Every structure is written in C-alpha cells, then in structure tokens.
Image: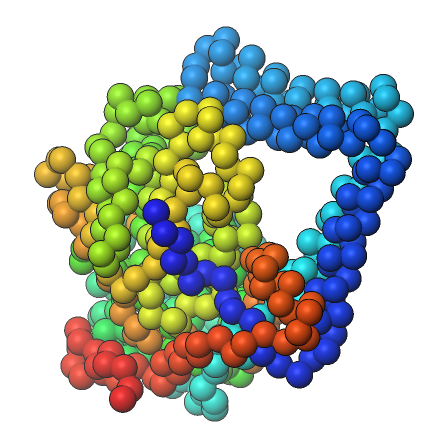
Length: 473
C-alpha cells in the first residue's frame, strides 16, 4: 500500500547553513556509532547487533501476544516483554560490552537528533496563521461541564472568572443528558456572538459545529481530561483559566472540521478494534480491563465487523483498526500517531493498522514503513462493512452509524479564538529521510517543496446552518 501521508511537513529550501552542517554531523555520529561497535567489540559486533535486533523483535512479538491472548499465555507474554531487554543487557555485560553498547547507542541517538534538527520544518510551514485583531465579544456564551477532567471547572474557578469577564455561563449539571448543541443554538438566538466550551473533546465538537454554522468565534477551554484539540491549538493544558484570556486579548485562527456521516469531529473518528471496545458498557468504568478483555477476539477476527476503506482510488481491505483524523497526524513514533502540525490543510489523515500475527507485530520496528501500518490522506474517506451499522468512536464518544460511512472535511469552517499569549505548538518532529539528508549534507540545500496554501480567512456565514467554504481562486 503506498504511503502518501502528508503528516510530515516538508523542509523548505533556505539559506540556513547550519542545516547542512547538522546533516553532516548526523552522518559523522552514525559513522562513529558503527566504528565504536566494530573497533571495541571486534568480531562480536555482528553478534551484538543481532542480539539487539532479536531483543526488539521478541519484545514487539510479546506485546502482541499479551494483547491477543488470555489467561497464562497473556502473563507469560508480559514476562517475556519485560525479560527480553534485560536479557540483552545481561549478555552485553557478561561479555564486557555493555559500555560499548551504551556509547554506540548514544552516538546513534545523537545522530538521529541531529538529522531531525537538520530536516526540521521552517516555522512558516507548520505554524497556523492568525487573523488580527480580534474584537472583544459583546455577548460571549460558555458551556462548562463540572464533571469533565476530574472537576477542573470548580478547581480553577472557571465559572466565576468567566462571568467576571462578561461571559454568560451554562453549567451542565443535569439532571439527565444535556443537548449542548441545542443550548448553544438557543444562546445564538438570544444574541451570543461567541461560543465556548470547558469540557471534553466530544462536547467541544458539538458546540464547534454550531459556531461554524453561524460563523461566530469559538473558544476552547482546557477543562477536559486529555484536551487533544486544545493541544494542537497550542493552548495551556495545565491552566484552563488562561484560555479565558481569549475573551479580552485574543486572536483568531481558521481551522478545519471533520465530518463522519452527519456528526462533526475536531480530532478523529475511529473504526475497528478501538471503536468496538468503546461500545462496551463497562468501558467507561474500566477502560484498561475492558480493552484487555475484548482485544483477543477483535484481533483474531472472531468479533467485530470486517472493514473496507477507500481513500480516493486507494483501497485498504480488512484493517483491524482505522483512524480518520481531522488533518493528518505526525508519524514520529512506531504507532504512527503523534500530534497534528496543522489543522488547516483541508485534508483527512488516515492511519490503518493490521497486525494479525506476532510476525507483523515484529515488523513494526520499521516504524511507518511497516507492512502493518498504512498512512493515507485525502478529502474524503469511505468506510464500509458487511453489516447495516458499524461502531464508530467520534472524538472518543461511542456510536453506531449506517454503512457505508462517509468522512469528509470542512475546510476553514471554524474560527477559533485563542489567547494572544499561549504556549504554542512545538516544532513537529521531522521524519528522518536518509537519502534526503545526504543531499542536504553534500549540496548544502534542498529543492523547494510544493507550497500548501491554507485558507486563512474567516468562515463567511451564508445562513444559519450553512457556510461558504469554497476555496479561493
């Protein structure tokens, strides 16, 4: 399956000579790691490499068996997972080569860090543009969930602080379920010119959809448990009250919204194993236990609906798990998931996982090049299955949707208002492309990559319930 992910941001050609020197340093450190191994371990260097590689393969295979089995086999796999790296270190120590392994590994690690620094994207390639100035809202309306994030609304006195800034606050105190989308629509009908949420990503998505429909700004307050959307907006997750500065000293960013069926998502929609797990009634109270109990049957195919995924002309057949992201996620780790560098590129990112055996689990040492991991990108994703309905996790919320399920992107649909002073988004990790790094080291520069021009204008409301999301030009 071709890897056409756009999650890694290309390095623009530029005049910084330090990038070329970092590339050269990376190759020198990689050479040093090899020389240290060969010189100080002599003929045993190949054996050292073999021991390290076998240990990594055994660890990944044991991790798969731990997830895919039950009973004694599961706990034996856990023991093997722990024992494998320890055994490798014992072997190195027995032959007096532990220090060689440590020094060589350190040199290789530094080589990787230098390579990533050399290929790091320029700020203009990954920082989302802001629209200034943002006028202070006359009637801000904020929805707060006191139960979200372990009670952050009360802990940080968010209601009191928001009201002192002139905001009207609605607390989701019940009784029963609260239709937050309807609450937001009623607020707009009463004259609200800004909507905001202090709660989880699922609640954020519901109210963001309303804000996008009416073309008014939306404020994210980091009162949820994980706050993935806020993280990719560069907001302060440790101090939710700091997000309220957007009401008095804010700037706007235009971001995309994902859509699965008729549901909006700000982060992702998941299908397959994870979506099946979150359907379990016991999942809310015992996430880890429910996952470990259900995964063996899901991984073996004894439970769950086989899926077919289509992204443009590319088809992905029977993946065990599929994640469709509102813009592509980074691929800097073995799982193929990380942070989103941008949420304004107008494209869905797709991660497909198919690890049906210990051999495929072991292939994950290849990272994003693993046969068990597929990375795709496109404006539309269609997920089908041989059942009338399939489970879907939409920003972590469980639901059943009729097949085929169509995922689309609404480009520049939402105007998010963020504090001018905020932590910001760190530079995304660059994928280490050694041939590209070699060209940089030898020639001192790289060809100019294609420029992706995001839509950076405010969404223009055509009417309540509709937006003009046409791209310029």
